[in-house]
Length: 220
Image (cartoon, rainbow, N blue to C red; front, side):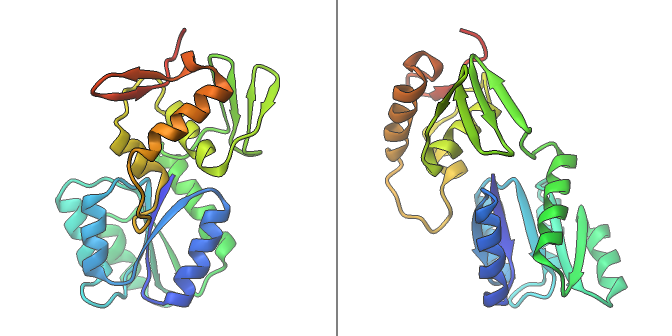
């Protein structure tokens, strides 16, 4: 899953990003409101952690703009601990939850996971399709009963394909789902990882739709 983390305290942002990545999220960072607004409009995110006290443009302005544009991405806002008015304004602007500073990273992770579950974007605990079983909690994959060893990128790609089973997904969409904003890679790398997954799971489990993209079929 891809998260946009908007925080102008670089040390705090990098620490949070590291924790989120450890939990399996892809994380893009933005340090001011102007950059955050642009990234939120240009990329597909499963969730946003948004500090309200930002340079350039406030978090409230950014949030109001997103909601005005019809962006329904789940947003967890970060506010000053004693600022009840900021929390109220954030919720009125369209935030889904809030967390006061200072906070423990474990609480932020728990709140974000709960928010994604409520919004319907959080991963299921177990995905089982066509003999492929992906365990989200253990981060393990089995083909029938046989364990399958995957790299982190292969795992992210398979998880995304399975979560969108039956849909035709373009290379661009798959690329945006597994790579972070500042990673400069050739989009054709997706073909390499698709081939690796086919080698490990069976070529019939990932279909190519010529000129459209790839599909993880629900039935074979």
